[in-house]
Image (cartoon, rainbow, N blue to C red; front, side, top):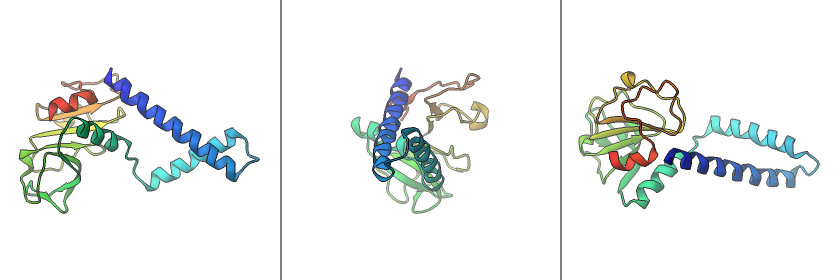
Length: 173
């Protein structure tokens, strides 16, 4: 049920952005048809997404964590020795209040766009969160009690042991 909520909110946000953009484009191109303005907008979104990262999912998770009182660091790095660092492997969230040099094994990590198979040292819990069904198989991901995939749109051939939705993130960390 919670997956429906996040997808509904995402659709509403997208629709609001489309309506707002068409109004703004109409002011610049008053003689264009709405359908042509929508096509122009969609094309410009494609170009923009190639140049910038969409932060909807990160913002949603940050709001969820904040609303439930979790401390976290957003846009952090883990070095080759498993420590929170100023550079290294990028992760979207470290849940808790880590300082530079702290070992990642004390914290939960949430990553939204990469599932970080390159870490030599593992966090207490690693969650790969995605809105789509573009996630690795459970075996390839090495799913376990401490490594989980959360998705809003499971695949028909979903082989995850833990079939988690976004509400479950709060119980995993």
